[in-house]
Image (cartoon, rainbow, N blue to C red):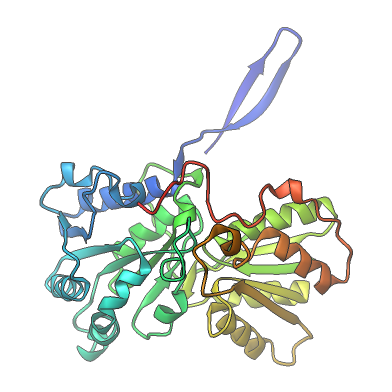
Length: 368
């Protein structure tokens, strides 16, 4: 909220605008959305391995059980079983939120998710909704190795009946989780672990954000950068540096991976005529493939638009010295934009700090 303030000094009096700030971490926004959901609707239950742990799943579930002991359940390592239980709760009038500290843990429950949860509403002729949220933590992280550095968004986005979202900032994380909890469809809610400590302005009030809308977060006319989740951060870093070089990028955050908001993407593509899709996950058979195909199908012969893509190289090794080369970085994006636009860009590595580090910050010392 903008508030006009008079700022006085001995020399002069100046009118400035100050933003009334309430800054939260991404993890705190998730926690607040969960807290407010339970507070306003006692049908909401939080379930998962370690949800009442002292570290609270990267801080996202801290102390919620202390306030709502009947709505928070720490569960054993029986993913398929408690996912089936959550389906039973959902079709019985509850609104479960399941938390997996690793996306890979959810793979043990895919039968329940793909064959039961995703199809229940359809098989009941639309009579039985499934208000269920499954939080999946994804992405790179401090020597996690090939089994726990994955972003498997495309696997879930492939399944009809699921809504799949992937917020890139704390504001969207809170608003989209509040919307997901109240949606009648099962929602897969992806969180990149490198986002948990990022911050943004987040209102204290209960608010909702659409689960099917992309967002233009920076306007430009030279090239469109399309991305989601943590990769959006790298796109913004690249676009800021490119602006110094008089190259203006339009940056789009997909936010929703199923459905994809192609209306926003096509409009931008027609404006810039150049598109680079930066996949947060693996490039082949992934989200970037679907975005590229969908764009080209819709553009058809309207105009010539060049579409390119980049993404993660998998599997990711455990050692940081090698893992750092596997992910799309701001520097990678700069080099690609330079080639696409046929413009020489002098890249200052010091501007970006350590290249492609596999540690989000010095305080991040381990997986939990």
